[in-house]
Amino acid sequence: DAKTTQPPSMDCAEGRAANLPCNHSTISGNEYVYWYRQIHSQGPQYIIHGLKNNETNEMASLIITEDRKSSTLILPHATLRDTAVYYCTWGYAGGTSYGKLTFGQGTILTVHP
Amino acid sequence: DSGVTQTPKHLITATGQRVTLRCSPRSGDLSVYWYQQSLDQGLQFLIQYYNGEERAKGNILERFSAQQFPDLHSELNLSSLELGDSALYFCASSVGFGETQYFGPGTRLLVL
Image (cartoon, each protein chain N blue to C red):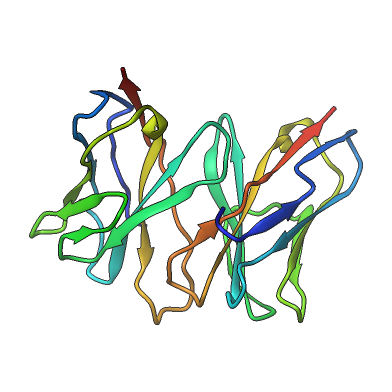
C-alpha cells in the first residue's frame, strides 16, 4: 500500500495562505491524491483531489509535483474556521474494484488571529 | 452537511453487549464504507459495500459484521463488545467505487 507523510502540526496567521505539504512517494500511477479535513470529532470533510494536474475548487488548490511524489494543499486565505486536522490520503482511480481510503495521522493546522 | 446520515449519534453500552449502527448514504450513492476512529489507531477502513454486495474488507474484527440493504442503507453490527471498541464510527458513501467519498457525522460508541 502507498504511504503518506505529513508534518504533525503547522500554524498559520488568519488571512494568510496555508500551505500543507504531503509526501506520497510510493503512490502509483492510478491512485488519486485526496485531501480531507476533520474539525474536532466531526466526520472528515472532503476538500479536493487530483491525479497529476493541479486542481482548484472553491475551498482550496492542490499542487501535485510532476513526479507525483508529493503535493501541497493551499488554503488561500485561512480563517479561524479552517483550524482542523488535515489528512492527505490516496485512493484508486475510478474503474477499480474498491476505493478504500488510507489515513495517516494528518497535520493539525492551527490558524491564529 | 454531506448528505450522509448516521444514527444514533451517541451510544453507551456495557462489555459483552451487541449494538447496531445505521447509515443512510447520499441520494444516488451506491457504495457505503465504514471506518473506525480510535485515539490510538486513528481513522481505519473497516469494510465497503457496493449495491448490496461486500467489495472490500479492511481491519474489521470477526465480532463485527455489516450489510447493505436493497434501499442502500447500511448497518454495522458490533457484538461481544470490549472496552477497546470504544471509538467513533464513520460511514461514508460514494457514487461508485474509487470515487470521492463523503462522510457522515459519525456515531460515538462508549463501552463501559
